[in-house]
Image 1: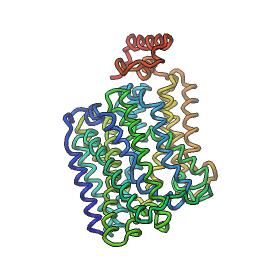
Image 2 (image 1 turned 90 degrees about the vertical axis):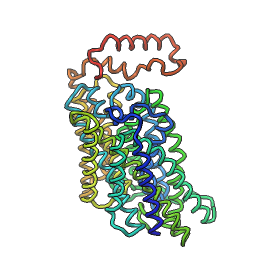
Image 3 (image 1 turned 180 degrees about the vertical axis):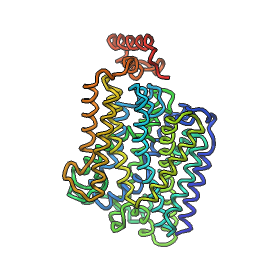
Length: 513
């Protein structure tokens, strides 16, 4: 089995580096490294988004939770899908029209605050590190479980491949890697899952028992089969997706807002197809490997269902798929976070981008070595929760409410992030605070929204000048963005768009640099 697993891992790592290191046509300017020169086609961008979302948590952790905890865990993939619906409805087009590169850039542009950019970058860094540590620990689990080698070899393989792809050509190289590996993951996990199901007798997969019940929650409520626990994870995923650095950066890589919307729609279609994977492996794991740890169930299935050479080969194929999932998410997070960090450290450019990427990777490896392996889903849910309690209210209010101020955003970040951190740390220390405080998303998200609104209302003098122009820039469709709809042909709507465009042409003093 060791030979098959190492062969599969080596194949994915070498293929990923070869695909990602093929430098795009343009890869020297700031826009080339941060947003792939804004020239990514919607369907290719959709595949890259889907590849980032189908991480180790989706491919290994969620299926393991379904196998061990039953029906309530089937809602976890729904939460991620709902997040893209929220992005499509509220965020994607206005954010793309803003013309910024990263979420800290958007905060600085929309609130006209230089101090807010490094403040938001710190939160983006924490969220990114949570995702990266989860992927690195998952890589260590794959290597240790299937080969018996020390986990740090898995960390080193993923880290070296990720760094090579990231510094080769920025987000352009990352897009090529992620889009190609999504199809690899889809074929691997669906193919092996169907083979295992067929060899088990091809019986209809029925919904096994598993109603909502009290349970021991993991970090931020992950793995808790109770109704409040499931609702907390759903809320975190639905509202936190828009603030994930590796997901939201994809909004900026399209040519215009219309193409960005098409990318999100394409990602939703692809994720719907991939959504078969967690329930399929969860049902098979519930029957054949329920006694294993959640992150190990998927990897152990082929050997338990098909002893012998066939099981070893399928295990090697699954190991390749798992490393494809790890590498795609890891490199996406690394480039997004590195781009945000480098934009805060002058001079901005390819050299500072590469230095920031290297520093972020070293920090992730250090945190991985200093921490104990946890279920990948738990760390990912922490990232989703922190994003929902910080970047979600900033984006929603910043796009749709003109009275938002920098003081309001700072208060919301401090309270939302502080409440999340306090509840997670108290849970790790064994301090039980009771419901609903045991589930950070149920408390931190409304607190963050309320703090931003209330502080903005009491600091009206800090509303940035030129906010009317900024709102017009985000909400007025680009010229030539497509045929007019019935709403656009309405005289009232036409007059409103004409007025907004006039505001954009008359108020240029506060334009985005």
